[in-house]
Length: 319
Image 1 (tube, helix red, strand yellow):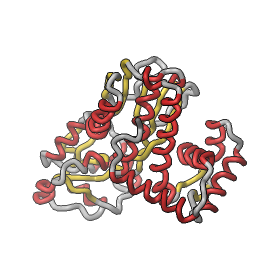
Image 2: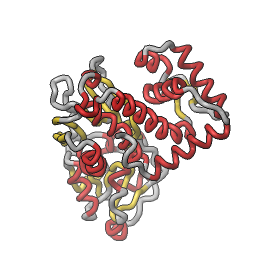
Image 3: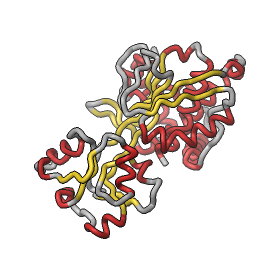
């Protein structure tokens, strides 16, 4: 199920994965790959050990063995945990696809997929629901035709514990022990504006140039104001042409040429007339978490949707 609908970026990752296996001319232990994924998703050996029930030294040995077999560095050890290298991120997508395929094989062996039917309630923010999920859900319909999705589109965090949703895509990792959270990618944010606006007002070259531009942002002061203060700019001097908490309205305002906004990469990419600005501005990257209640272990329909999203969404976020 999860290997249906493969796209080009995953093909590249799988080719990279295969090249390492062929280069070393040896079979690799699947347990090593599981440890690699756990360390990647949890950010430290300690957190990965707690999540998997494996000892921290064992996980460390697995990572070291993979690095030795492939002659690459997978993680940089820092005071804040494990920082994946560019090569690790390249291989991670193929590893996740292999993990999903293994889970799919297990379900086929137990005939669990025959029971994957019913309603699954999925929660996601507006940008993810409107620009990331439609193509994924369209392909999933072919693979899981007996499952109906109820999509909760909200920028607020739906409460999985209260059963407001079965599965959620979030940019904040939940802390409740009864929820399972899996990091499946990250989202980049850029300053952006329509080319018509930039023709009229000029292209900002330095972050301080934004003081002379019309901005689009949220109603309540937030990240834009804090970012300005971090640059030593008086946030009170920022000029907002439009404030709205509706992210789709912000995007349409950008496309209409109202001003400069800070939006996610996958949204900006949908309109070639909208230009990314200020590449030197180091904006945060937000992690994307796939969150589910632990009952996934006993619900075939939730497990099937969870596995499909885990295999398909990362490729779109990395595109």
